[in-house]
Image (cartoon, rainbow over all chains, first blue to last red; front, side, top):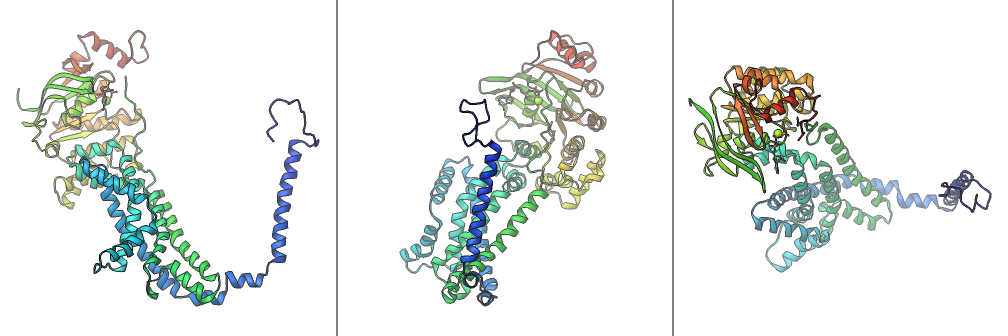
Length: 287
Length: 255
Ligand SMILES: Nc1ncnc2c1ncn2[C@@H]1O[C@H](COP(=O)(O)OP(=O)(O)OP(=O)(O)O)[C@@H](O)[C@H]1O
Ligand SMILES: [Mg+2]
């Protein structure tokens, strides 16, 4: 393929085909294979059974309205709880990480390294089952358990994201705030954090999407019918209906949550367009 | 000296082992306009930033309105309210509208109510000729407009002294005039001003006194007619020759 440099001694390929001709043959073969596979599928597959297995309308209809009113709502609620708690915790961790007080930095650093390294499932198991088992009589409300577990998982990642965002705020913004008489804390709250969040909107949305999917881990806590989130709902329906349809429907429900998030993110990004600062048009100093 | 606003004595600043300011003594009286000129790297910005302690002096005293800013027990945030600062790169808060840029510190620092802060803000926008831009975001403004907002933002805190660090250096030439006009207006109203600038015409016409800095020290100072019109020091002369006639840079070693 890469014979286009100086004319090599071996000369044109032995087959007697030019490079272009050979390319055409290769492409033609690829199409032929694709068509053959599709044709074989069309002939050999049992479409009736496939449709029944993957998209049985009766089964799908039987999932409504609970799949929305219970499962989807629960997924959203669990995610919101975890994300809200995680974001707050992450902000505190990020500020601790940048503190001038050594121990704060160490604690935050250790927390981040520790929880970033653990599987989310392990955290659900320890908060939901480990702690109540180790301390009998001490029991957490199920929603609180989910909030803590998801929040702990998310906060370790988000803390690093927030810290990067805070560092990305131009120094001139801080100097302007200080020269107006704002204290360091006031500057942080009024100027730095709002701008940092604009900078980290994309990775933060990403984290929210990850948490939406991680909320499925709530299954390890066990649940009553009206506590089921999407994945668990799908799993239960699977055993009742013996069809792939519930999985397909539940999968679509996740997309119903996540695709709007991506759209909102793009909107916000476009709206805040300029991002950090456009006042750096050039360092026109000098003589 | 009558009514000293800024009193700087023995000011030194080093970055690591590099001495950027060496032993500067300066006094600025109320209503005085002092322009600081000098080659790039001579320490002009550092000098200005030491006045409101954006840069911590290595040694020396900075006293504004009788309050020693360099005293570790001074509430520096409170003291800075007396000193407005305008930056070369404008540094408007990019996430806030023009109006909020002008009200945020009034409200959070001075504790003014919303109505009062907005009234003050609109008054100052009027003063810089941008009354119609209150709702705009900084990114929607030209450089010259952003810089005038920067001035209005500083003025909204009712400072006693205004510090300008090359306020027109990042602007396209046709936008410089509007900003200088605003500064000239301020000077006429009797504002005490310390202005780092390369605009010799402005310094000549508006300054009461010009400081020429080189190598971290003040080499020559006096009325603009003397320092710019008839400089005594060789270094001042060669600097002015380069600035006033930039196409003839023959022998003069550039920084
Ligand atoms: N934060 C810093 N760390 C180290 N060196 C610095 C720092 N700030 C300034 N300097 C050095 O101090 C010297 C004076 O800088 P300063 O910015 O005060 O010069 P200037 O006269 O304002 O120049 P210009 O006209 O280019 O703005 C320069 O040599 C610069 O490299
Ligand atoms: Mg400078």
